Length: 115
Length: 111
Image (cartoon, rainbow over all chains, first blue to last red; front, side, top):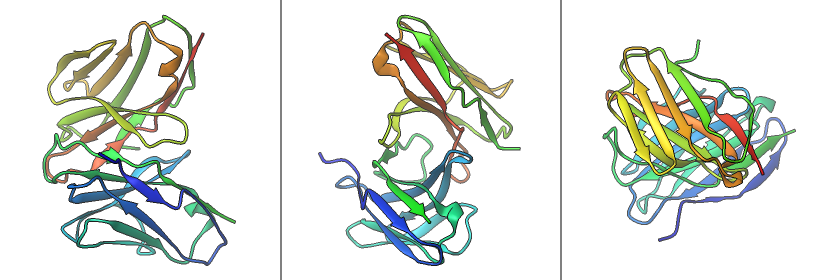
């Protein structure tokens, strides 16, 4: 079974631009979560989508948004990029949601650099 | 103050040594505890999970949870160079199911 895939793997943008990142979950997984990983803040939860609806949200500004399609693939968008948005963006998929023992499988991440 | 505190290290040990990693947390609502391993240029992968106080073993790995002290640990016995990675603790509250991660500890096992 293929793992979680994320595209692109690397991205360079300039301040003020917007970016869209894509995540394809493991086949059959319906929940997709997004995380931001930086050296200073570590891994921080952005949001979770399940059945095309945002179910949970972390403490990030409205410039960060996402969506999920009927095939469970998800995209996240960051508008008006800032230097501090430079990070590794990780997507994780899981079979279901709402259970504490629900294992999340992570993709390799998209490395975003904002110049 | 972060909800989950983890010393980022780095930690360097000789092959065969015991690696000891730990995290503290402030919110007693956390009920489920995990350890993830992240190799360079890869996403985190789940190593172990536990929901009760006490020890859980899986091969060379032992996870400990002390809910009364809000303290969790991961021990790696007979460490190998292939164990060189960043280890992240994570925990979940049953009321929101969001994973809260520690900063991660970078471990290098020297051959």
